[in-house]
Length: 266
Image 1: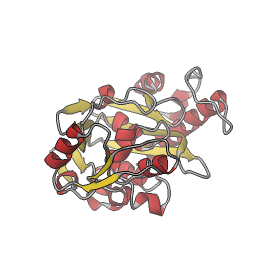
Image 2: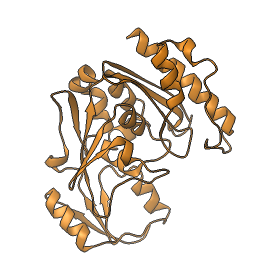
Image 3: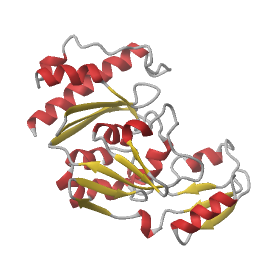
């Protein structure tokens, strides 16, 4: 690990000003991705700016038809929150499947969404629920936010403050986890809202995506049978020592069916 200076920000504005003045500084919330990166000497920030304890980034509440979760809320908080369980039970269930207890008690929802790991769980919920990512500068629709592997619409110095999830009529999440890391080899979040059903897939490809062919089929008939014969292209699927492209595409199909079964039973 390279040497760096540790700075504990006292406010969001202070963190924003410090990062602007120190372009090689990195923000630290839970550190579940950043700390391993530093240990492997794959990053050399001049400063780590700790924003994990800022009250402006905490809190979970329902505002109208949306569930608003502060960016520094830990996975365990989301998983056990009575507010989340009542508003979007599937989101609480998703958070409870992330990593292991140590990760869930340190990692944050904002850090996960900012990092946009292609195998992370939250991006599927953000996209399926047509959420809005609120930063210190603007609001970004889910459809515009995710831009590929580890890539987002965030600009330099932009900090996620909260995420606003539209509360669906019903929703469900299913994933096939990697046995060692717990990351999704394929995870599918299905959500039925005012504008119909949305199907978001994570883990299978280079980034989270909507399976629009499945959405169209389910718009005609809300049934697991409606997915039979619906194609899922394998061209953009991930392939590694754990699974071929075809295997991951099949996993995505299976997880979609399981999630839909759970949704229909809700």
